[in-house]
Length: 153
Image (cartoon, rainbow, N blue to C red; front, side, top):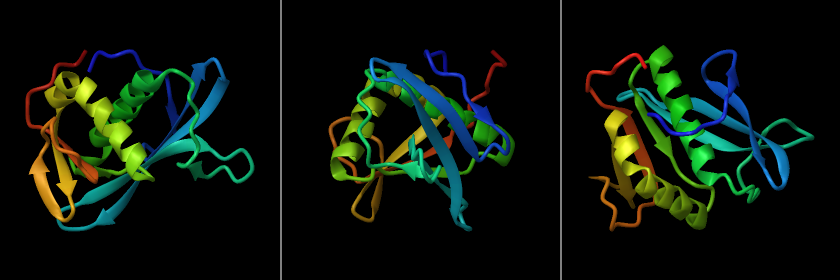
């Protein structure tokens, strides 16, 4: 995936930190993967701003730092690196609100050719899982790195 992205740091390949840079300054972001199911193995992807007091992820804040696509590309890069270290498991992503889930879907739609080169993308409508389509509103997303041969670039 050759999209502009932020550099990030990680110590365990399950939590990633980076800074969003924009008109509101540098805002620390966190991406965290946590296993939520055994068979098949599914990890939840949690993402948001770091709460400056607790250090936890605040997934309700709206940063509006005018770098949405760079942030989404950075999250996607963290998913790739996570898969490199823990295997090509399913990863679940859902916004903290329906509006945020819709924003994620719009980002997926905009970056669909780049994302689908590396990942199979599915969407949940209620309890039903579908292959991702651009004209359906989803409640959550499930991705899994596909079996295409990767280059080392």
